[in-house]
Image 1 (cartoon, rainbow over the protein chains, first blue to last red):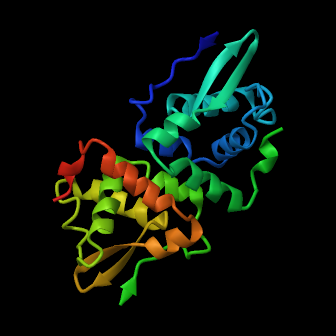
Image 2 (tube, rainbow over the protein chains, first blue to last red; image 1 turned 30 degrees about the vertical axis):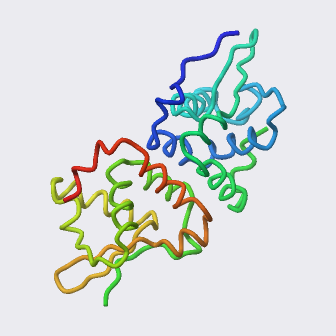
Image 3 (cartoon, one colour; image 1 turned 90 degrees about the horizontal axis):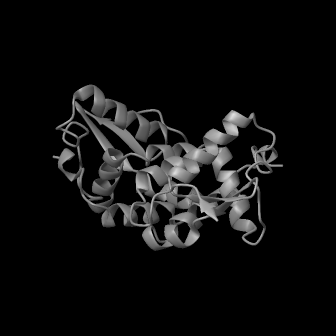
Length: 113
Length: 113
């Protein structure tokens, strides 16, 4: 199983993590992955309403920031939230952000199919 | 006492708060203010090592993002961390970020006088 390149746990950088999470579309992706940890999402399935180049940009920021991992599964790209790594490096951060996303106006909920 | 324009507590936007906090220099400012809540800092005193235009940029992102307030005190600009507002809107977020800043390598500590 191939995993696309990503920073290791030790390489996680707070600024890049916060930058990755500072966008409503990316917040919704992360909230969706967090809420459904056992669902095998496909990157093409999430953000299906966005132009492909825009969706690819968001996935790259999330992956290179260390917030998600992406593995290749045949023709699918499977994203997963790196909760264990984030919780280990930045305790409480992910849950605080997910809590804030949940209470924010769901003005961007529609971008996720 | 004049206070520079800032978003109200209700106007605080998670994405803008995270963007404001996604920079190591701004993280250090916030950590310094959080660690010394009773000290009357001057904006010119903090970030004294940076070009003035750069420092002004960082102060504006922090203020417009709702992370700090700035009041005019004679010829001084006094920054204060909006902890109560941030804690009310995004419980646990500020403390999680401050905790992460504290454990990160202090590679940017030198920018604060």
